[in-house]
Image 1 (tube, rainbow, N blue to C red):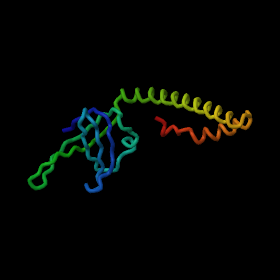
Image 2 (image 1 turned 60 degrees about the horizontal axis):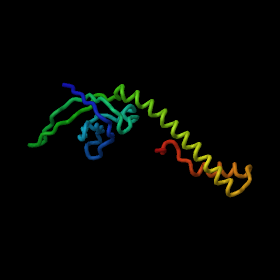
Image 3 (image 1 turned 180 degrees about the vertical axis):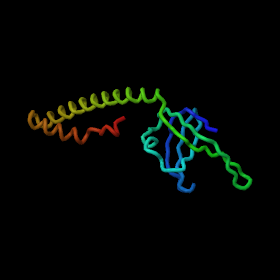
Image 4 (image 1 turned 90 degrees about the vertical axis):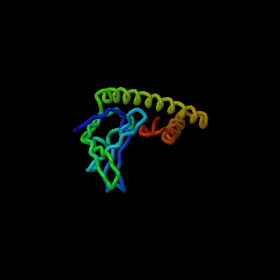
Length: 143
């Protein structure tokens, strides 16, 4: 019997000690729910970011080892919810706007610093660009 859970994506990986099976975790409230995958982690899961709202469909199987009983949650599918997709586009656009503002402000500061050092406009432009290249944080690491 298949069940589903809606929560925030927490992460995924390969287990070294569990026969190389893959795992996926979804955070629901304060609890983390772990799922087992029998194959490599698909690209759709690798593209998910921590905190994305997802819907996971899984099947529970009970396994017994000696006297101990385990409940395995085998992941059938996982996908972002429609709400997460809509919010992600708006957040990306807002992030790029903030990043561009950051770049413009930083370039202006570099130009002012270079002008204070040289006093000439032509030399100050080249120095400002060099300073900007060193100081500017790449978008991947911004925020």
